[in-house]
Length: 229
Image 1 (cartoon, rainbow, N blue to C red):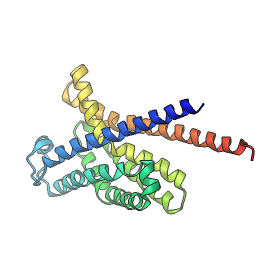
Image 2 (image 1 turned 45 degrees about the horizontal axis):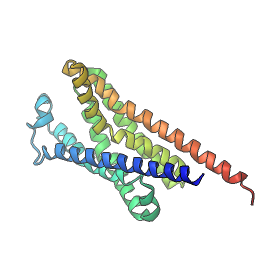
Image 3 (image 1 turned 90 degrees about the horizontal axis):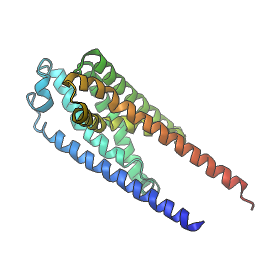
Image 4 (image 1 turned 30 degrees about the horizontal axis):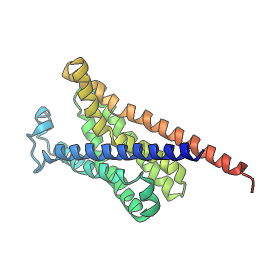
């Protein structure tokens, strides 16, 4: 029985490395996208199609606040989940978590909500982006509050949901690439679709991970209780 268990752990470890490697790669790509907006100018990249509001000071403030803070949200979020960091470097986990929560609640979340209100694609896309921002703020706050209360099971579940929404910055672009490649729809049709697909799909994956982890933990507890002393 030892060999299958060892092989299973090795496979799980390789899968975990692949996931974190992919996260780092896509975060690097997001960093390249962010670099387009350094220095801050209202006439580059995405802002070229937002000229109706790009000249307004409050929109520029929200946009650049969101862009600059979100890259650090992605980076600090990655540090929250590896078991090695949580167990061997708890101080790093704790402080990076505080930075993650603070950036979302104070900067990235509120600015994302304002951007969502002015999102392309009409009310369908605007509703998706505003709901995304509100849930992002809510899940992050609930995760932080659970940690403060010492309820780390609830903390872990809420932070899975929070980071799933954080990753919508990546998944939205992946969905856009796939839809354009396969179906070549009109630009606004793509935008309305990815506005929802970019985060709803992530949240469903997070719920599956939470369910699987909870079931696994419950099974291990039950197994330990039945082992004779």
